[in-house]
Length: 274
Ligand code: HEC
Image 1 (spheres, rainbow, N blue to C red):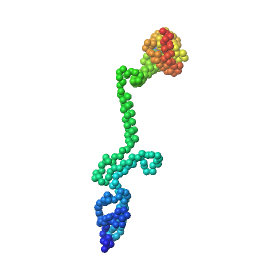
Image 2: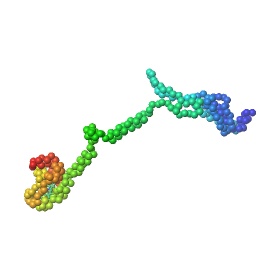
Image 3: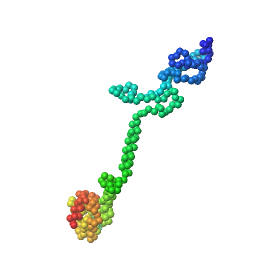
Image 4: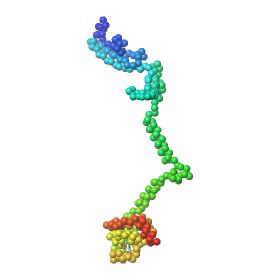
């Protein structure tokens, strides 16, 4: 009789674990409640067998794990760890099926502070020290002691770069000399002598060159020409560095290729005159 019923209708049998008797028999679709509290914690298997009207059957196993007991954490020992001597373990149990509501607080297990928090902490401390040192203004009476005095780097470089741009031989020549000797160093015939291929400018010993620029020149006959205008003196207008720069500009321009001078050479000539 039951066989006839089997073959005529769709039917679903539900088995738990390896039990021979089904825990439920339904005709599909079926919704039912499985009360896991009656099961032991651990692995279980639900087997659903479905029969079609012509008696064909299919089987589906679903393995699942019941855990109604408290959760367990162990710190200090992992699966397959190799240990020796005494080891210290932290064991905790949390959560239980008996409770209606699962409370997250009871699930908290003390754990070591993660290393990224330490890294963050160190970065913040380092940054705040950096910030503090940079922002801190020392008390007035200590402000200029070597310990607290801030290096005046910005001002020094500013001054240095001003000097650099100021001491440019070509600039000085253009400003102070080219009106007479001309930009191209060829002077003006019979009025201002050329400095291009000039004996004084090309001379290996630069003393005369420096002396003329510093103290001027008057009445000298250069290459057979007597110049009626004097060459002005620059000692009061140009520093040693500036004279050296403009002298070097003349010594290396318009095809001239004479030995260079330094500010200290200019200083020597200047001092000898005094
Ligand atoms: C106002 C015009 C004038 C200016 C500006 C002038 N010079 Fe002269 N310079 C002369 C004259 C003129 C002579 C020739 C003087 C003489 O022969 O007595 C001369 C001579 C010279 C000589 C010597 C040439 C030689 O063969 O003896 C040198 C070097 C020289 N000048 C360099 C300079 C430099 C460097 C500057 C700029 C810092 C300059 N001069 C600015 C007019 C000028």
